[in-house]
Length: 312
Image (cartoon, rainbow, N blue to C red):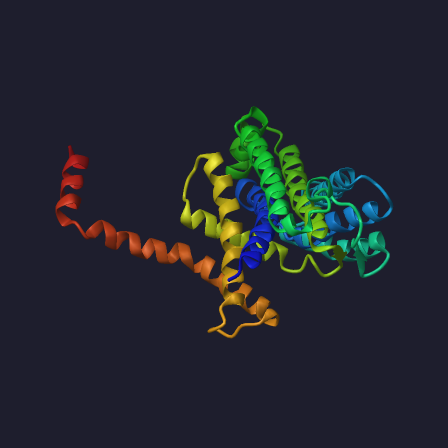
């Protein structure tokens, strides 16, 4: 695989690391099965692209894309909390509705950004030869800031209340936590991060497209599962790190598969590769559980010693 392909995979992996962090909040921290991601990802990209074309500052456009995603997540949570609609069904309703909203926002199936300024323009400038590694560098900075802010938030009083809501909502309510507000805030934060990824994605790919959100939730879930498998931990800073690493590894595996000439895969096989990788990621925890007992039983003397110590 060439260096350009590797840097391209790194760039997309860093963007989808933000998606993985958003999915981590909804699926793992809040225990809220959310499919809104397939709509909020292109929503963030659509809002950012339209504002950039209209002459707005790229950073302001990116921030507005985040706000739009937060509103989408807030709507999903509101349908569940206030109207009593099932979590999964509420997210499906919002995801379907966002398809039409995204078309309305863009006014067309796609919005090109060729020649338009982006958040990368001040750093890249006219040095297009260095663009391949300068853009990932900017994305690393954005990802680090987001991760550190999440780490700080989730050890704060509000963050701990949100984690308690996802772990045991009934117990959290008994402790005086407003669980409904926590769900609303958490879903808004989750989809804001996913929309941020969408806004950055369109600026690296040169335009927004109505179909770019298809499979976003699958990628996010795969990244979270891969990260949890390679780096199992309970400390929140390691949990967020694992999700980001999972996204990077996921995109690297796809790039390796597409660039492996002996396999014979082509660009049209991307969905097939995605399905295989996601299936493998889902099976990984089971494989790990089956292998771990074998490792423990490989040393009978140590196992017997541990049992004696436990008996004492």
